[in-house]
Every structure is written in C-alpha cells, then in structure tokens.
Image (cartoon, rainbow, N blue to C red; front, side):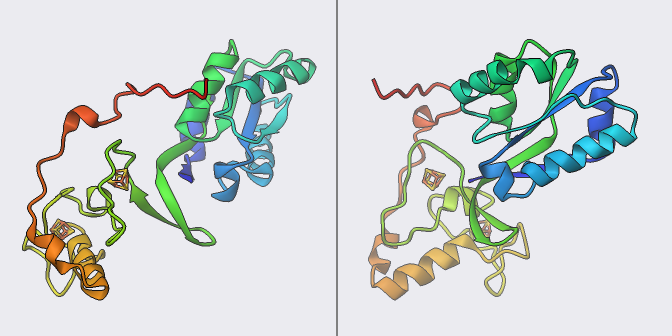
Length: 216
Ligand code: SF4
Ligand code: SF4
C-alpha cells in the first residue's frame, strides 16, 4: 500500500491561495486506509476550507485516483457539480495527483505527502519494506529487504557499525543485516551469507519511469 501523510493546512492554503472555488477528491483505496484521503478526511478538509472562505462545489471519492479511466468516468459523471471549480485538491498519493492533472484541465493540488510503499502492521502503523527497485533480491530464505531497510542499502552486510543490534545510522531501528543473519540462522541457511553479492545492476532500476507494462 502507498503510505501518505496529510500536508499541513497552511501549506494547502498557500497552494490554493489564487483559487476561490476548490473541489476535493479523495481516494477510497490507499489514502482511505491511511486515514489521509477517505470520506472523513475529504469532509474535514472541505469544512476547513469553507471556514477559510473557500467555496467547495464538490466533495468526491473514487476507488483509486491513480486509475485514469475511473477518474475520467467520475469527471464526466460529476461535470455539473464540478462546474465553476477553479482548482482541485487531491487527497491521494503522487500517482493520483499526476493522474488527476491529466484528467482535469484545472490546477491540481496535492493535499498529501507520499511517503513509501508500506506494510500495514496494525491500524495506523505502517512500515517501509520495499523501494520498488525493479530487481528484487529477496530469495525466500531471509525475506528482509536490505535495499530498503538498511539506510546504506548494502547488498553485503552488516557494515560493522551496529551497536547492540541497533543500526548506526538510525538508532531506533534494528540493523537490517542482523535481522537477516538471525532469520537465516533460524532457517539454517547461514552459508548463503558467505557468498559476496555482486554490486547492484543499476541499469535494471525502474526509476525514472522507464518501465511500461500492459496486459495486451
Ligand atoms: S529488493 Fe527491490 S523489489 Fe525486492 S523488496 Fe527490496 S526494494 Fe523491493
Ligand atoms: S548498522 Fe546495519 S542497517 Fe545500519 S547501515 Fe549498517 S548494515 Fe545497514
């Protein structure tokens, strides 16, 4: 799931300063689960904008603002309500914001900061576990991603700086490589750590945006 965080109201206000009529669109998928862009948050920001003197012609939800086709359908269906809108505030991830910018011929403002691809640990508690590198090295034995969970993204670790299991860079985290060691030890596959992994092949990385996928 894409983890997002609400922007400060002052920051949103600054972005919306030139516009008087602002519609709000929330995302019923990731942002709703993060409680940053669900119906409740859309209602709340619409109320706050109203208190700041804005008009909010439409408060809308879509199950995936990043789904261009769904957003186009919403835009057609809600054309009447959106009439007169000068800007659209999007409560969704950066992909949703950019999709909305392609669909609406209006200024589109991000109401959230997009943080990472995360695991839901419990309600409101998310953990970054994958950086979408495009060349997954998880091999089934120690499924802990060092690219994401080691601040140095070491493919051969640990670096030697950990103290009592704590990462030397982010003290409140356990060293990812110690966790990998423990996991391999538990599974009886420590020998794999004796093999030195080759440096990462950066030509396989997915950013910036070289990968096209389709189900044709
Ligand atoms: S190795 Fe790459 S694709 Fe696999 S979990 Fe880590 S960042 Fe994600
Ligand atoms: S202490 Fe562990 S997690 Fe932290 S940078 Fe070194 S190897 Fe990576």
